[in-house]
Length: 379
Image (cartoon, rainbow, N blue to C red; front, side, top):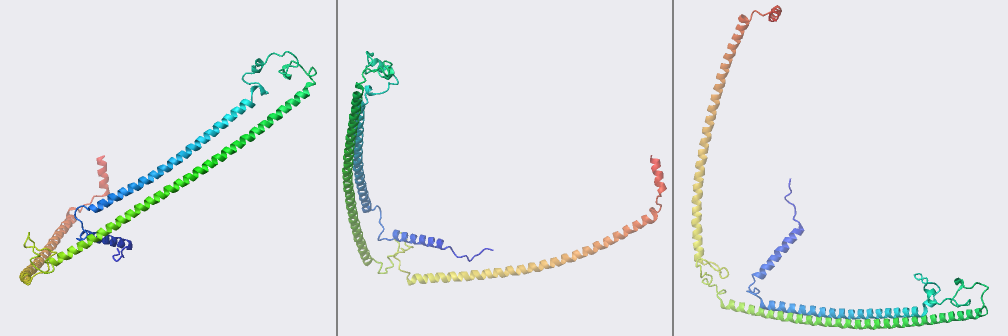
């Protein structure tokens, strides 16, 4: 069984009420003669065009500021890349100079692995046992055969002094390189700080310019909205004055019935000028209503007479049907009585015939010997 008293959904009721309110507001806006505008609103279109131009100007100023910032960032990045490339070039140059000065071929202790006979062909053949170009592996002299034994300590001291001076030079050069690298790093950090300060100043100036442009745009938009509201109020006042003047000078308040007559169709009236019917029109309507009432009463009486006639005919038909039904019942009872007597007579005849057959025709019943003899003869 379905429930018919279910309360409505509050959300659905709220949605329906909101749609109804929106429709009422729309109708009040559309059908209000004071605010309705026929054709195109040129002022609204001009204000929209001005707003679009102001929006485009603001966007272009933002894009220009962004482009200036990007150019500055690109310049700073290029400067940093140039400084990095210059620093790498100086470092590569110093490494190459160090290799040329400190890592010469004559100061190496091993052979070139790709050309092991290079040093042999570079120096001349040994001329004596104490040849400085012949080492212990040259097989030119052996221990105990050194003729310059007295010069060995002095040569070792000279070699030690040479190695010490070379180490001192290397340390001084390393300290000088570190000092130079620190100075370049300080200069780079100082340049980066100066560039960052400049970028902050540029960003601040761009932000101030954007804020100023936005403030000017807001002021212009506020002034434009104020001017538009002023024009709207002035137009509303003019419309009110015109409406009051038209009401005072028109026939609406004088209740002139000729004003409500439609010039195109005289039998129709103008709803917004019609103030009511005249006594003659009301009397004519009352006469027409009275004639309609009498006609309706006569029609009702004719319908009642017709209904009573139909009811009498229905009663007569019902009585005739009842009489026919009683006659049909009597005929059926008579038919059943005749059929019963016929069946009883037929049953007596069949019984007499059966008694005749049993008493006269079927008195000689065959015995078992008859059946046995019949079966033998058939074989």
